[in-house]
Image (cartoon, rainbow over all chains, first blue to last red; front, side):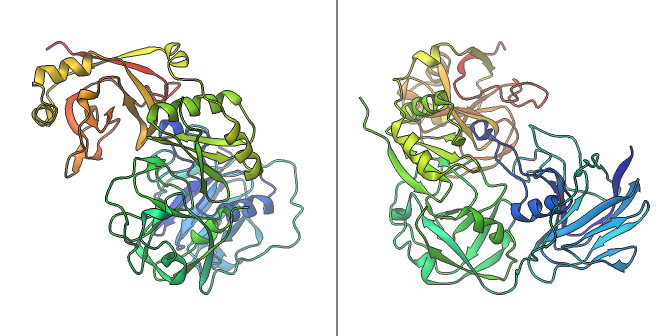
Length: 287
Length: 209
């Protein structure tokens, strides 16, 4: 093995993610992939990787890896966090070189939740159904990283990055997500409640979905909704009235009414919300 | 003739197509896939609907125009070309007596009804490899259990609403369990990994004791 990353610490959870599995919803396999796809893409552009190369999605810092074999160009995107190489601060949202044997460590992010450690060539555990993504809902793909794991790193291509500015996302402050009225907005008594008040991101949130605390969205109908297709960004309302915003590892079908669907570009921002953060919604028309 | 499908909004990347029945949803999904249109990224048929997600870079307006133009053929013809998978079942499920009571049949008649009709995988979902099977015999339509089990073993064969299904792996679930099978439903080393992929015809046979 010429290049690899050996895992020395994982923090709360660290997963390998790319842009996910395509076209398999019909057999119950969802898309999965990076929770913040924009951050993954940014890492890959910085490193001149293929857009969908896999990186390590690090939730709330705490990852430490050792560069094994040849040295590697790396960068950290997504939630801005302290990044050190052998204890020396290098910062996030910049490309740095890690020598063989160097220890790369990500601290807790100052804002946001999920950071991405990209490496030139991409991390390359075996693909499952065309993707290296870890899907926590279906259990497909590489299991969550553990201390002692050795992640193979792919061959760097011969391209160079043509980026000369890097946008550091501003993940502090209150967030407004644009949403389109959902197909079942009439199944709750007052769907506008979603946009007229703020919602608290609860602890019961993960890559499958984010549970939002606030006033209950009361169901207006007694009958059960027949199961229907679900997608990232859908806001589903279970009988308890507490909305759930589906994220990367959402179920393929769901049985509760979808009252709103967050605009695709804003779902990446949603995936950076922390428990305790406040989020608001704003109705927009689907373009 | 069925009514024209209703196109419901589903964000800025998808459209939810509403149809009159599971059969119409299956037919619509088959017809849509047959168009092989590049604007289509993902097709998720379900009980009364087909969720269609635009491919990356495709305009939602183009997807809507395509969806309004899909003309499903009536069911049957396409299905007849699919293979038939035989699934041996031991009919000793915990809810067999309840299903008999709910349907007004004897337990033996439940088994006879389950094995005596051809089922077809209408759609997937719930878990990798899970197929929602529809049959022709309405006598087996039963509600879900009032309370879900926290753990249903892999291979459990169940009924819920108009569907039959087999749990590909151990999971929570609320279906009425009538039996079990050893057939591997999901195998990543097999292509396709799902034994019960949409469109597949299924015949249940009683396993020899």
